[in-house]
Length: 344
Figure 1 (tube, rainbow, N blue to C red):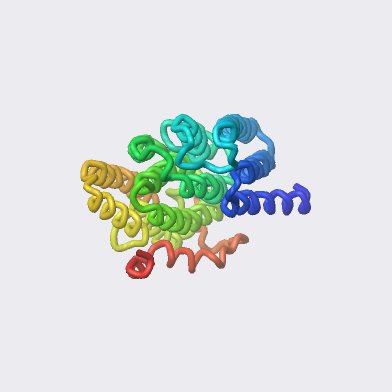
Figure 2 (figure 1 turned 120 degrees about the horizontal axis):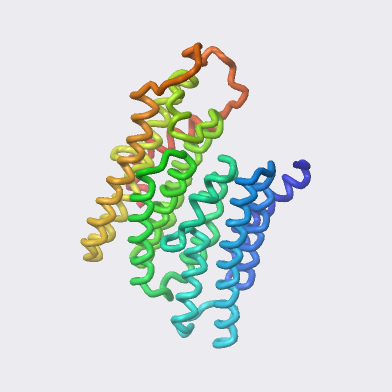
């Protein structure tokens, strides 16, 4: 792709969520979401093949539907109140429609089916943008208006997302689909605490991004797209093995790694608010998530898959892709738990 075009696309992707986050006007928020949506589609279809074209089409249709519902909510609110922002007087139906549109944007259950399919059809670097940066704008709108949305609706969606993210991730063999279901489960954790302590939602999002970025970097550098390809990691990049193992355990929420911090804080907050059943359910689903991350570690570290390669070690070959940012991100994504008194 032309460098000028690519720069314009990346600038638009960066600017979209910024406009949404900094706006108090609903119409400007919608414009920010649209900029984000339209800029990502050319990246998805950069090297056209049937799978990427299908992924871009699915992404466009679902996101356009969500944008249409959100715009409808904005116009209904303007017709009712004459204001470009939601108020406590806003009709409950309008807030439900707004939540549905943002749930589609975020890939929250039961509107999640597009996310694994789209993630599987695109490149890993575009998948990283889809599962991290693209979540910021819809979450910022939810964060701003969460008090006006029915808490039962939020908790119901969060519970479904956590369960679906955990159960559907169990039988996946493709790394991109595993990361997509992991994203759905993490979004469920973020939404579950929104009615009680919204600042924990932001903390969870921040830590989720910190853990996801180095994982995508490693997968992209070594082209690990399935569990079978990851089984060759011991011969391709033995030093990467402990790194990816720690990041996966941290993403699963195993103490004393960074990923334990948001889960610990969220469960504590839920118990403070006498929501023991939800706290127990989420702790149990966290174990299912941890199981499929451990399965990934098992296949990369403890098994030797059948291979048709005569040469067993590739570590002597020079790797052209160097990620200088990986080491600090690796440390942050695994060893930040002692900072919890500062963050909480």
